[in-house]
Length: 173
Image (cartoon, rainbow, N blue to C red; front, side, top):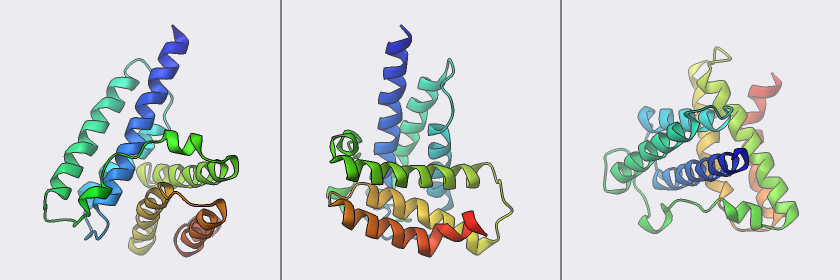
């Protein structure tokens, strides 16, 4: 029974993460939208929590919130413009099915995304406005490039560019 629960938790975590990638793509030309950013940060932070008795229900609820937000945004909402063909939930199995080196690079990106989201969610640092905005931008950029089907070299080039420009200073100050 414990194996089934672990599998269900993994499936629902993948659904939330895939929905987040779709939401970020819906916000491709985003205007600052605190509500969407809060959903992204809370969702990513939830993915880092250990599974308790109501964890699957909380993941399902969060996935519904993500889909509601994406529907609002991609249906001509006031916050973002989107390319409708690019807003579907991302299939996280594509990460696991990727070549080993690309999979490792994407998992590294996920670690940086999760660490940034937890820092924002738990307010582990008293960030000034620009730092907070840069960290939020890293979440959008990181989730966006996570879905790129490319070589490891191309992916790492994008990852390190994002890391140098946005996130690295917050972890190494």
